[in-house]
Length: 188
Image 1 (cartoon, rainbow, N blue to C red):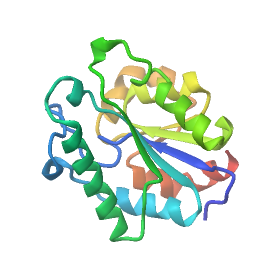
Image 2 (image 1 turned 45 degrees about the vertical axis):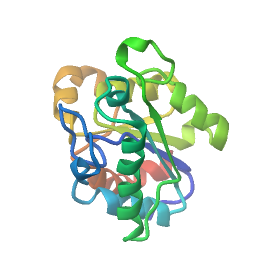
Image 3 (image 1 turned 180 degrees about the vertical axis):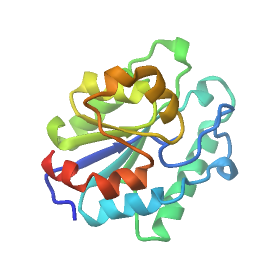
Image 4 (image 1 turned 135 degrees about the vertical axis):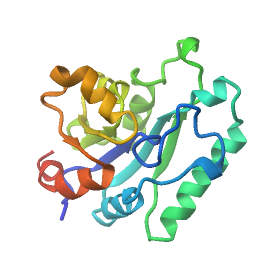
């Protein structure tokens, strides 16, 4: 089982926790967990590891859905996790359109910087798990550990950035990452 060496796991949402869509996840009904992802989060919770979601949600900036709808989507995640004794310590998101040039949209580190200030957990004891190159870039820029999962945009990310990912652990799913990376997370 994981120990307390890794103290914070930051998860991207779409493509890591739930199935992604090129048309965006715009309603709670479209939020469908990837099998095993919620159980993986609950496993991290049982290991006393903080779990935070840091997600780009440009659908708000694109006017595809409202902030209220995003809150309902996240409430569905929280409700589904509670059914299996799991929880998210916090959900942080970037609502901006990619052209807004904000500081929070991954691969920029604004969301990660905010979490660092709030939780004061050393970067070397933090892991970001994502499915896109922007997640990996954000982790590298921020200075924390990164894991790529092959769900969502993961296969495309691997195909396009294989040489740049040579030192990044890669797993099929979030559940696979948590199950098989126990030793990796223990060493962090």
